[in-house]
Length: 196
Ligand code: GDP
Ligand code: FE
Ligand code: FE
Ligand code: FE
Image 1: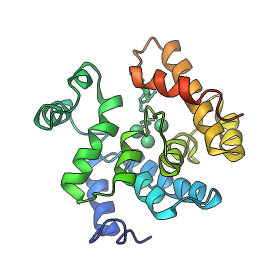
Image 2: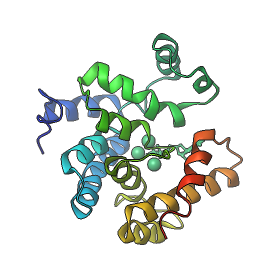
Image 3: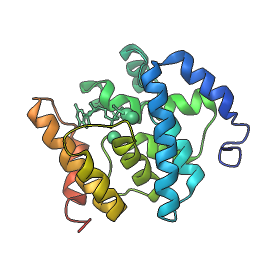
Image 4: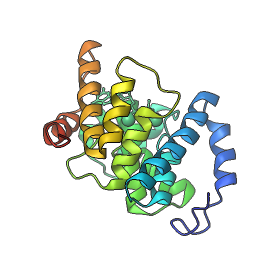
């Protein structure tokens, strides 16, 4: 795959090596699988395949960084201070996009937004956002109760896939007594009846 048109100078092999050196083997292979899955979803739905693929590849780029790195960036870049009340689950997408910009020189806002939105979604989601969000959830190695249903909805339409994923994720977080980032509810309320 060649992403030079979206991010001039982007060297995929160099980025793969960099990612491999800064994350677990499992996380690295997950990113490569999400890239492929996102490209497939994009192709099936008439969405820019390279933007979806690049967002898929990079979506968890910052996931294994220490909390201190995220909190410093939130302060230095004047991001929403409310973010400080959450943790890695929320930061690695929203703040991770800033790290991708600064370290990899990827400035394409469609790609960066898809990274920002890949965990909690959003009310306005582009096709690239939806492909990245869903690919993360249904890539081939994902296995959880409900995965077959998730894949079926994603095949029906991207909107149905997004709606199911938000519903499933919120139910899972509640079951585990985990706090829920308010934007996740806002996304849920918006999408829940959109994929019928
Ligand atoms: P991953 O990075 O490939 O593991 O997948 P995601 O980025 O989609 O999700 C990361 C983690 O965040 C998962 O454990 C989700 O269950 C969790 N998560 C998703 N939404 C929320 C939320 O609103 N609040 C909290 N606390 N966690 C969430
Ligand atoms: Fe993630
Ligand atoms: Fe996700
Ligand atoms: Fe992921």
